[in-house]
Length: 209
Image (cartoon, rainbow, N blue to C red; front, side, top):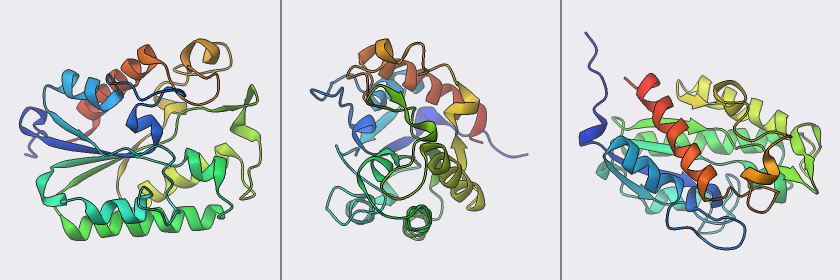
C-alpha cells in the first residue's frame, strides 16, 4: 500500500514570481502565501520567489538560473508557480515557454529524483481592468492558451498541477478582483494571499501521496 505523504516532516521550497514572493503591487508582505502554507501544513517552507521572474528569462531571478542555485537535496517537495510574467512581459512563443518549463523540471528531477514536484497555474490577471483570459500578448497567445500549455506540460511530465479554473474558479473573478487584487491588476492583498495558501494546502493534502 502506498504511503501517504507526511507534510509534518517535510521541507518544502516554493519557486515562482511576485505571487510567490508576496508582492501586493506596492510592497512585499511578510504574510505571503508560503508563510501561510507553512502554518496550515505545520511544516517548513522556504520561499524562493522573485519579483518579475519568468520561465524563459536569462536573468538570475528567472527560473533557468534560479534552479541552478538551489540545493534540491535539502527538500522533499517543490511548488512551481510561474508563468504570468512570460505572458505579461516576454515575446517568447508559447512553445518556448512550455519547452523551457519542461527542461527546467527535468534539471530539478536530475538533481533530486525523489523530490515531489507540484505545479500551480497562474492566478487570473486583469490588464487595464480587463480579464486577460482571451487577450493576446506579445508572444501571440492568450492567457488561457498559456494556462492550457503549462497544464499540459506538467501533465505530460506526470506532475500534479493546480488549475484555478477547476479547483476554485471564484477565487479571483470579474466580480471580486478589485477587492481581491491589491492593485486591481495581478497582485493579491493580504487576505487573498491567505486564501491562496488555504487552497494550496487543501490541494496538496488531497492530491499528494
